[in-house]
Image (cartoon, rainbow, N blue to C red):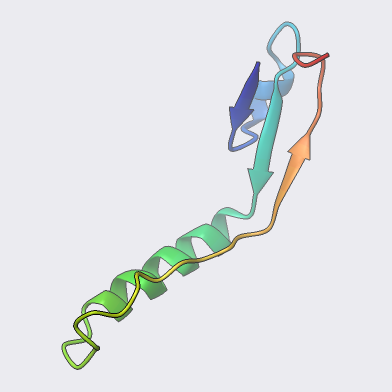
Length: 65
């Protein structure tokens, strides 16, 4: 079993939960930048959607073999 967000309770579970974690600040910043860019009225009408790649880390704990 694997979780996402690496909250502090992941280590308190029995067995401790393997999670994928990353910087909440980076996720928030990328989301705001994409939102503001989508509000730009001068943008090209048929351009591909914006994407953000946020570095993350897999924290392997006892919930995976």
